[in-house]
Length: 317
Image 1: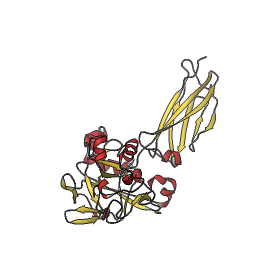
Image 2: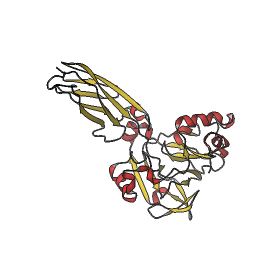
Image 3: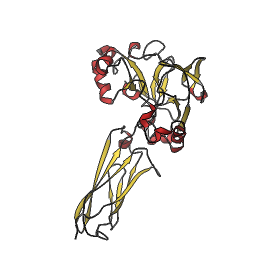
Image 4: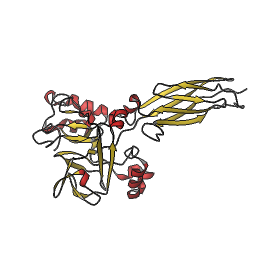
């Protein structure tokens, strides 16, 4: 008689979802000898609307509710772990599942006014080949435009997809010139001497959700929205409602949150991204991680800290 060895599996938030469920499977085995019919067939409940179903031969299937609040709260690089104890005639063992987090792509909300050489234009009117003004490289042509409708049902199940509202004049007179709504992971451009001391760059990108203060920057309670993405040959700083932020950045994990059709459109433009996402190039500015944003908050003068009052000198408009 053999004895069982542990098995592992992994799923990723918002990836390969079928019927609202994340799923993976495997076959736990004995280190030697046959385990056919040796396992206790059962269904074991997990912690995230999840369960592991194992049959008498050790074949197991794992599912988890993708809309579970704890799973949806994960960001890229963050994980959850579930350990299921399984039994056999050769003894007990474990199946360990890792749930990987994933950031949603950065994007603007319908109605956002994007600065072009001919004046501001609503983002939903822009198309491939149109020219947008960028901070670093002047007028640049759009190479891809993506959009996705987020329904009320999606917001109910995926609260983290709700846009962040940045109120008019939040960062100073006319910055932004109208309320600006962006996705939570859309990165705003921050300029402050503390950033130069901490990160070697006076200007850095910070995700909108890290700037929430509950008064002038907050998660909006809209019932539905349409998100738009603008892609250029390079990662750019663009101006939206007179406030500087980023264009879509497909490097790293940027494309993993897209549906297959949209992802294939980008791959047709940049085929090397399919196997080497880093070939798109560097981000236009250093992107603050969560802990870096917290450090920067601490270094800023008390009257200008994000959680208190944001002034025009902190963000480039």
